[in-house]
Length: 124
Image (cartoon, rainbow, N blue to C red; front, top):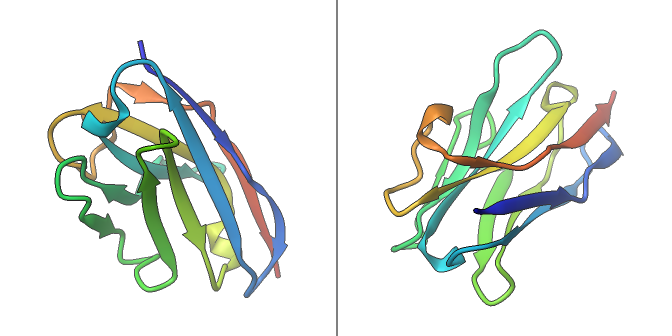
């Protein structure tokens, strides 16, 4: 069983920066492709960024490309999402997700494990 715990959310002004983290326990983190999704009130959960277990290559949604950076530290079993140039429309609950082997897909149903989410609020 894989347990994911997010941290680092909070309130930030538009244009500001925030880093959220997701610590994993159980299994072998090195074999997990990881992703961040977000869900705003009244909207569907959407893909934000993903990082592949084998190559470490990253993929980003168009809406965050150039502003957000996903990274992983296999020694700490942690994946990060560095968010810069935040906009009010980035306000959402941010969830991390894990998929054992396979690449980091953009579809939520491809992931077997989810964290509880962390709130990110960007004020205008």
